[in-house]
Structure formats: structure tokens, C-alpha cells
Length: 419
Ligand SMILES: [Zn+2]
Image (cartoon, rainbow, N blue to C red; front, side, top):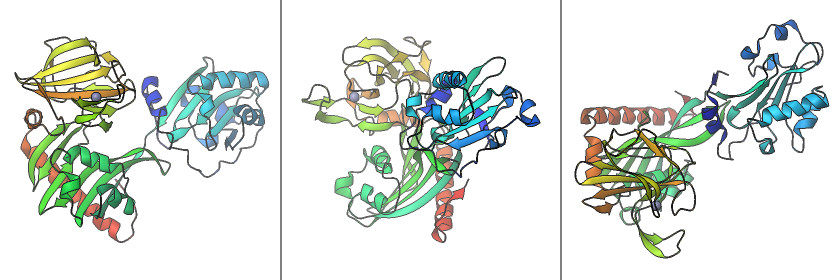
């Protein structure tokens, strides 16, 4: 497996993953003969140590009910060294999160002491304690393999039900509602029999899916109209919605990959408990996730406001404004009057102000009044102006042919294809 070393901060983010991602039942690595270490180990410098089983004198998965201490003991590590190993691993990984299926690999030095102890946890992430001249612990995150998949479904009662029947991740129903919610009223407009075709990608490590799958392209035929959505791969979070092959709207996500948890309009307030107007949309994301400007503009406010907590306003021309609230931090170099472009980091997700947990509250104001960020045309036009329409049409055609190719490939053996 190709491993990539990441800065600890990034690797930490990789460690904090949804609990569903359990280490696969990988083919068991048989414990190597424990004995005097061979020349291969002596020749290794600590920096070269990887998770290759061949370098380990002991390697196996942790079984249900076992403790780390018992496994290390079985590897022939003395009690005092075991305590040191636990401290070193515990510095980078909460050992209470150990689960069956995690793996331990140990390589011993000629003096009978551990030279390297590797703990492989969720998503193939390796916590590695090295006991050389300068003992240290590091986190090594694997390069996931990106797998594209495609499927089609016929809508009978609801989008979610159609997805579930075809074995397509039902979370996509939320993505579709987010993108088309400002244009299509799913409850009213869906009569049944509509076709939905989707292209998405999944990240895999050792054949096991990590993270959540993400949509790349969707096509929905509704009342003789064809709605298509292309989600970008460039990290800008700017999705384009097309109607009958023409650009209808561009929508930029202020938090990449975040889930929309509350929409614009009247709702029961999650903290106050009464029915109030929700003047924006909420995206749930981990504290510290970067928040980016959705369109080019000028910073109009940074600071604290009651209810909103720490927040930033960005003015886009004279009559349009975007607001980003509940931030844990505002970008250091941000000040009123500063120019930003779409995708610039303006702060980090937090839980300041009145909120039940870490999330971004995002508002779009036009002529001083809050509008539905998912449906407002004005901001969409400002975002769309940043890029040539030609590129957007090229992306649509590329997405269409990719979908066709995947669907054709999927028709005979319903298998996956590597990128
Ligand atoms: Zn909100």
C-alpha cells in the first residue's frame, strides 16, 4: 500500500472519522517468527519504517475482549517497555477507541526491545511509535483509491425510496434536495416514473470504503424537463445546475462536504423551542472545518453579534451580502475592507452564539433582506460570473459521457471499475 506522510494536524482530521468505518477483516497476517532480529531490521533506519508486514517480527489483529497490553506482552515486550509503548501510541490516538480488527505490528531490535510498534486503526490509518535514538510517534494516512460508480433508479414514491431500492446511498437524497430544492418541489412535482441517474465516487483503502460517498453528477427527468447537476472535483464546492443542457444556477458551498441540516424558512427553534424564521441555512461540520467565501466580494464585518456568535459578513456589490456565523475563529488576515475571492478561507466552523453544536449558519441578504441561499439567483449570478460558461458546458458533457460509460459498464457484470 502506498503511504503518504501528512502533517499531524491533517492526519488528526483523518483519524476523526465516522464510527461506521471499521477496519476490514483483512487476511490475517501470521505472526512472524519471534527471535533474534534479522539483518533486514538492523539495516532499517526508523524513518524508513513502514507498515510492511515483512519488517514486523510480530503482527496480528486485535480480537474482541483483548487488551493492548496483552497483545504487546504476547509480542515479547517487557512490562516497562509496554508502558512506554502505550504512552507513545496514546499520545496520538485515544486507546479507548481500540476495536477488534485494529492491527498491531511490532519489530524488535537485537537487544530484545521494541524498535517500532505500529497500530493500524480506522481507514487504514497507522499510528507508529518509533524507539530509535529519538523516540517519536507519528501518524501515517494511506492514499485512498477513488472508485467511481453509477446507477439509475426510477422514482415511484420518493427520491430516498428510489435510491434505497437500487442500493444507492440514500444520503444523496439530501444532496439532491439541497441543489434542486429552490427549483423543484419534490412533493408536488414528482408523479412517479421519473428517471434518476447518478454518478458518484467512493474512497477505499484495502477494498473497504472510507469516508462517505460523494456525488459527482446527477440527472433527473421531470415533466419533460431534464435537470442535471455537476459537483466539481476541484475543491471549490461550486456545483452547477443545468436545465435542458443550459446553465440554470451555480451554487457554492461555504463548507466543503458538509451536510445541510436546516433549511431557510419558518421552523421550531432548536434552542428557544418556539417557531421562528430561520434566516439562513445550517451546515453541520466538525469544529475547525474551514469556512470559505462563496462569491468574490469585500469583507463588511468581522466580530461578535448576539445569537450569531463570531461571524463574518462579505458584501458582493452594493446590494448582496453573505453572512457566516457561529465561527470558532475568524481568519487572521481578515479585516473590514479586505477583498476575498470565492473559496478564500474566512474562518472556521464553531459553536459560538446560539446553536446546539458545531455548525455554520450561512445567510444571503439581498437589498437588506435575508433570502433563501439555496434558491437566490442574485448570488448565483455573481458566482457564475467568475467562470466562463463554456467551461461549465464542457464539464456537463464530460460528466454525461462518464455516466453513460459507467452505466454501460455496470449493465453486464454489476461491478465496480477503477478510475
Ligand atoms: Zn442557522
